[in-house]
Length: 243
Image 1 (cartoon, rainbow, N blue to C red):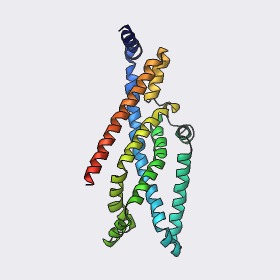
Image 2: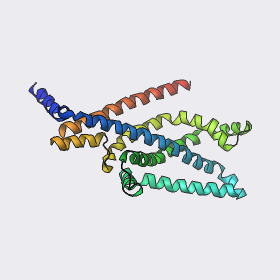
Image 3: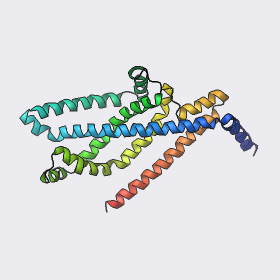
Image 4: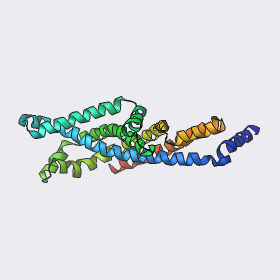
């Protein structure tokens, strides 16, 4: 019993005295802002890159025989996408974050938009491969159906293929959101007061690391457990809709 009393006294001294818990609230807010903002950027980039790569893979044989502007332009864009994917997935996200903050946006006063940009660029590479696998899983008959309705390739992708692709990849995309939520814990490297940085700030002011860092870990764990539960509900609903 005395152990729990001592633990509560320690928690009160570290987190509640001086309203230091406000650091955690502010940090959690920034964590959500960065995560949602980065995922939005990642989805936009992912759709564009996946569309380019799948368009090249599905049409390269027919385009190659004509060797026209369409083939060379699509081939160039596909090469650019491959370079982007290699760099984004082949280098640590914390290095990309520091390059964005200290080099690309060296004059930036606020690290939150920079973090959104850096994590968004990184997430876009993974989302692109998720979308690419989803598009490739759509039956080729759907492309032919779109053409028979008078749609061109882009219209077929936008109106027929991409809606079906989203249904296939939605659970995987939600898991990418969970992974991105945890990845943002390194945003403190560029001075952003995210959840992890907030816990470390409290620890530095109180000279007690046990309570702040344990609280940070507990918050992340609760968030991930809730999101994982929601993803499982989504997967069950999607499976029911298929029957």
